[in-house]
Length: 414
Image (cartoon, rainbow, N blue to C red; front, top):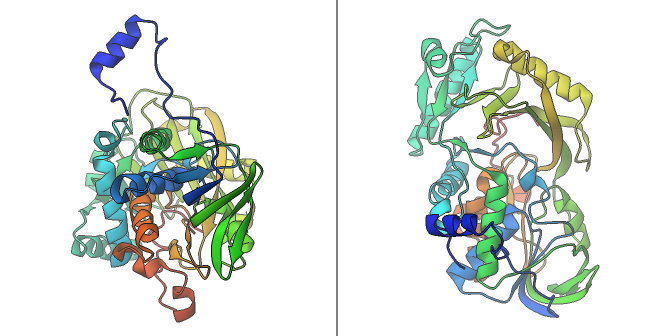
């Protein structure tokens, strides 16, 4: 992989940008692979990259029925944080945040990480006590969290309306949290994986999973049958559909989560603001747009489009908390498919089918988990045993009852 540098940027600018090489290869599909990963989103690409770089596997294919990053990876609000409540979640997501902090150097591709902080607001004395407990639990898990008074909130976010319909009583902030560029994360992992010899095959839909004697042998696709010793599913909202192909069920509900952006304005919001009561979250992108959203839809759906009622609710919530934005125009809206488990914690690791692995049930936390998800799944696939960080995220917890309930820390209602 040829590295980007200031010199290469200047040289290509002077030549009219005519000599840039493709960012990743467009290989021919082989008849068989050691590992086939279904889904060329962030998790699938990251898993392939870490399998190649850290575990020295080279005969790997990543298959996608669409394009690289065309699913949830390209349809989220790019928030990066690790302020989760339970120790298992805290350890996993902080590992992911630590990887994000060095990802641009790791991939030689600027993922535009901006650690501007993520602020969670409290609107009642009862919620304030819950927020305080949440922040204390995070600090016990060695993750940064700082409690803020209403005055400190106002100093951090001058445009906020503390005396809104549900007055702001305080909050807490994780200053290491923030946002990054979701497209850059997908492209960076795709470029790095391709340079390691991974075959990324786009427009190749998996139509069946072949199993003999309880063990996977390959997949049927729209481009033919492909043999595989090991297969990993990383398809976000379609996890239950792929699991059904392999003959087992997962406790996952799929529904759409909408978001939208305003017209661009000058920088005025220096942190990510989240309110569970007013029910909205908002940040300002590098292009000046306000990126905001709220809770998941109340109906099951595989649609990747927004709807007027939820748009109105989200805009009303934004204006209630930050009234200075009332004159802005909404430029576009979209939706991603979130796959939600009963405890809002992902399903990761082995499945009832030998050599078939799964990474799904991410709900609204998939983007922030991409580096750690790829790293831990690569370990699990290479060693055929769960990485220590995801031992509690397996399917068997729904049989034993050892759930990891992260509904309160998910950021939005499910």
